[in-house]
Length: 513
Picture 1 (cartoon, rainbow, N blue to C red):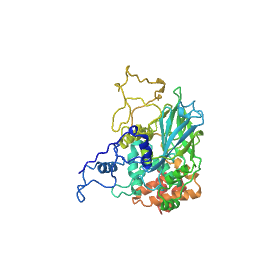
Picture 2: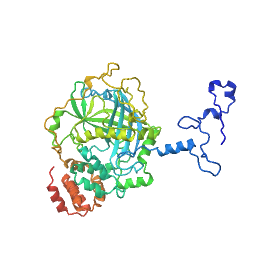
Picture 3: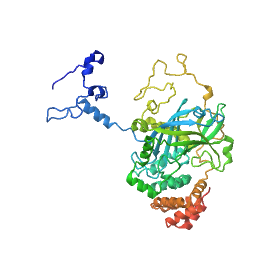
Picture 4: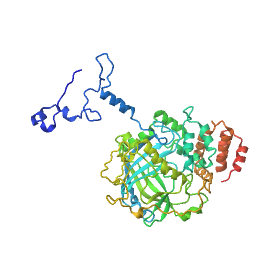
């Protein structure tokens, strides 16, 4: 083995004549290097022991390439793995100072954002045509820190208590023994969860297969709390309305699109932005005072419910105007969590939201690491000043000897006006369902809001999956749920499945709503 050492002189030591006489290509191309910055001499051939001998372990370029290749993937998101994202801006337009102190809503405020759209159940690179809720997660880089509004295209969810979230996802994921999604499994689960009737009715409608991310709405799903400068509380729901209009695919159209491209929604968004056709959404809010919650015949903090009759107010406009430069560094490493809140916005007592506030942040710390929020896509524009420290891949700039609080050596003052709002409580600790369940009425309201063709599509879509269920009790329980929501709705599905309509009616009559 022959060693060849080449001395590399700094530019400052090279004469002008040397610089001018060097080949132009040498000064306009950056040489290939290893991760430590050292230049690579040959990236085409491994180092071997002679022409016919084994490859040498000392070939650090080969070893590093293979090591880094083996580690290119972080753990895939358990849900929302398939997605695409874009940068943009939110411009506030309404004065909400009476209900929230959040600076993001000061009229005229322009806040940079990153939005990630996604499907929910299936893995990365799965077709974007599959029937599924669509994620609509927005990270606002506000002057007071990052606020994540993590929602879906549909305004409600399948469950109302986070303790059922792992079970729900497990039932909808591919079966552990076949790796194939199975309606026998998820309808077995949902036959025990009557509150899912509303969401199932929506997701089996054509809204479960949006034509594109640009042509769907977004919803925060949960009720949150607005808190004003005086500590006053107003409950709020968020709704993004697409200015491109709404467009969905029928099951047949979705199949045809999938035959041409299983990336159609990502391609549509990327191409629109590249062409300067920047998609926009107006943000609307619904507001309720705490004393108004009890006036409804359902629980307004139940994630399976919408707020009918509560007026919406436009508060700003979102524009997406830039595609990611690197999908992994931006879209895949983007860490959204409902617990990322700012002064003036707090979680409500919604039981599903309460669990998500913990679970999503915990997921990101597992998926990306303890320092996920140091990555550029997740880092706030506001100054971060706390004593969270160390951990793997820490790229922070912590200095000094004080890593605790309180301290008079390096004080980190807190503004008492930013304390969490107060909530009057009564009763005892418990494990019980909510008092006002009303599991079926809003499903029926939604069914009746559809056109006759949309109703027919919904029935056909549901019958296609429910017809695969072998367990008669599961099948008839689900049919009774749809019958309870609307008699015409239930009868249509029962007819499509050649089910015993009288049995369905009797089971539905025994259900309370």
